Length: 398
Image 1 (cartoon, one colour):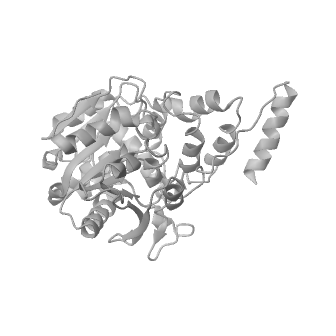
Image 2: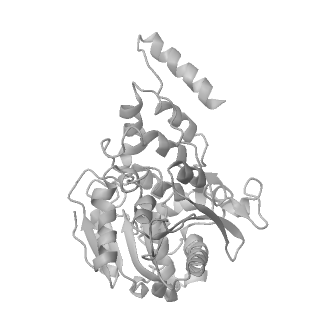
Image 3: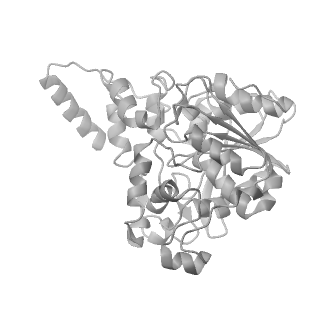
């Protein structure tokens, strides 16, 4: 109902000012699920489910070995960032999207989801639409409960002892936490490819993170245990309409929906833009939303429960930093000076805490936070870094 009303209202307003507008035809790829999207694009995909130790049921997808490949080069696990989903690695389409490129190169490709997003709204006992306890989580539960369950399942199904991890933004954060708290998982990761990685956010220019920092100290638990930025919610539906109006879609949609993240309109092209809007945002909890405000304020530290509970839980007034000296697995990071979320200065600070890491700062200074997922030059600037490393043990920073 929202979309027809918006179309009528916007067309009336623009007509009143003498502006003629035409609507783009909706792309059939915009509202497809992971399985449907892969099938539409000519790939085979499987749906799997992983149940965590605390009962969350997570959707997990596999693009099995391409039939043109005689043998597998190994297993790659793609993990999405904050508010997003596994669909990110398909959205730009064949030849451009992460998961399709890795599949074309004869890798066994998996794409995971964390609790609370579009594919993670299931539980063995809790109803996400009725039980507030379902939404009592943040990155710490994703790291210590979701991710180990996913890694264990993928390695078992693929009959491997190691996998390559491709993570965007928050996905880097949760693997860092996992390997810090459960160091045995370092041995399961051949290499982590962190695109637009987030840990410290001291220099983030993203205004929402700064707002989260202000709000993170003010909300009671009853508010924290709620869903936010749900797929198909009040943010996504108006955005779908605005971005479908040919006369205003590119300047307004790119300016409002993406620009604050660091965005180049020539990277996320006009054919991909409406598909992005069908799959992002994909939901999380208010608690996790505000957790990033804590990280902005406090640095890369454990959850801040407040002074009294911190004294009880941690034995100190403030939560401790994560011990990243235990993260011994190799990391390749890719960053950009145009990324308003993952600032290069903050990435360099992260690297000083890690025993085994390297950073490629892209020579193309137009790449923004979401361009690492949806930009047209992913096959020119991003995926070659990882593929070269996996083939030769070396890479050239483009």
